[in-house]
Length: 210
Image (cartoon, rainbow, N blue to C red; front, side):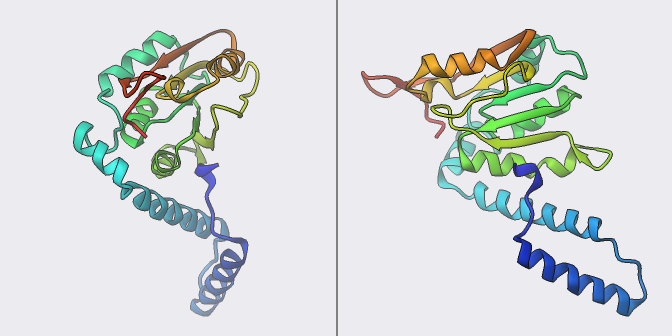
């Protein structure tokens, strides 16, 4: 889960020991929880910055703007949430997070919890860097999990609304994928599939995103 990235146990333990000794030497209180949170935030920032340098994301940023992998903008994302008709406390699921600006826009518009599933490493890392901006009582308001559209499953009846973004076009077993998607919707919920497509051959459609 990207929202809870921490250093390895050995390095984290060594850092805690050094910080504890430093606090004792300076006569200050030692807050291990705060230090671990700061380390996790630093790790997320480093991972996100490295991911942003991926040449594919840089090329897409030149086309659609920094932090985006498609031509969709904040206005589109607002309309998607309206189509899902979610209550403020409802759990929103997103398959295919896109990238940080699109995900930030959804976080700003939906005040409830969000669970994200992303099959591309670079967008997952950049989205994970937003966790510190969207906290509720020191708890992340969203989580990001790795997801393979060909093999992964989703919790049954797990979300009130599900946005599937830039994923269906990359899925070969579309029947299995769609079954997985619809089983994840709670009774009375809704699913919205959004794909920006570009034909690249005679076998199947694809998109320039990844």
